Length: 103
Image 1 (cartoon, rainbow, N blue to C red):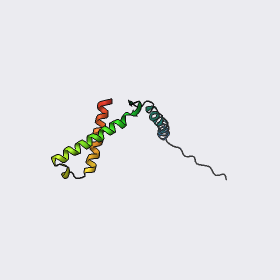
Image 2: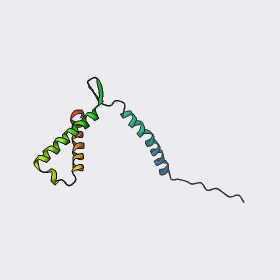
Image 3: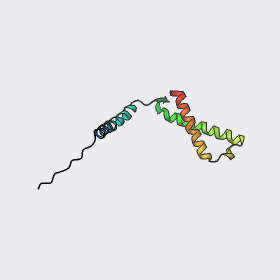
Image 4: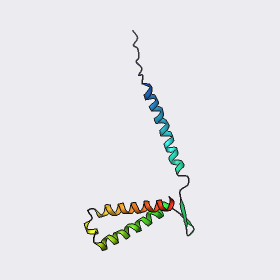
């Protein structure tokens, strides 16, 4: 007696999902690489700097100014986690400058 082999039969939807997943896993990295083709940069004293770096430095300056203002107003001592608050302020100011400058 010969033993018969059982083949797994997947439903058609599983095969379609697998094809979509394969396509997505192929196209997503290609789209990410295409987005990096032209990063915005600024010419400062003959050298090109990425715009995100300039925005991050300006955001840091904004967060330091906010810390000085909150310190003078006496609010700095009442903050529960000052490091987290100032980190969030840095990110918020950086993204606001990015949107205003390049948006």
